[in-house]
Image 1 (tube, rainbow, N blue to C red):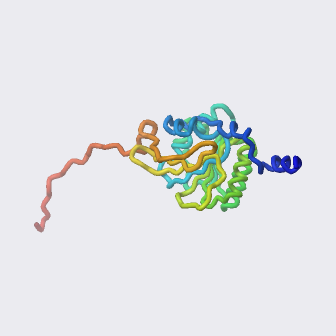
Image 2: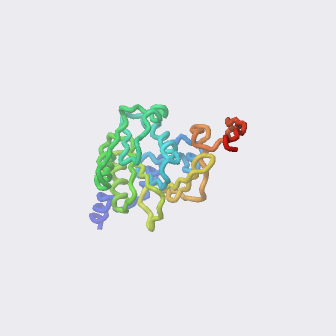
Image 3: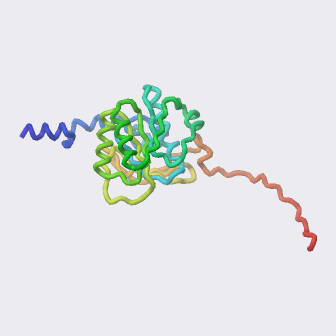
Length: 229
């Protein structure tokens, strides 16, 4: 009996209560409201599933945590399969060193998953951002294990679409644009609960992302009659 339990432990197929404390280790997201709701911030390691439209400021919400991570290490931050070119000046402005940014452009989804897994378990990366639409349960488990092995955090971004199952991840968030910044809904949190949507106000950090009333600079011109009028 004991040998069977030991085999399950070795294959990480058996959950133990002693594992909970490690799962709750967090690092600030850089936004007080998000930290308060998540009881500390984003997980230090594991997989975070992000369901979000592209281009609503999702990276500006998630990246500040990785700036903090890189302040205490010399590891890489990796972007795999990004749908558009990353803005290098924005990354520098946020505090990243471009020499520690790695961009991978895979040929297909299979290659993207392989690259993500290798980066995570290498121990050379603080975090890996992966854009992937069809992550399955067994794939999420592999990424979760790789992230725990390499003590890294993987962020999987996908466009909003309904799924009929819950992925085995440390945290799952749904993002939506709103006038003050980004509306966040926690759909899954390891060791915690989820609830109603809340707003992360980004007006101070990123005023260009919020709808600020602007006075019109248009000066009305006098009407000019046409030559035939």
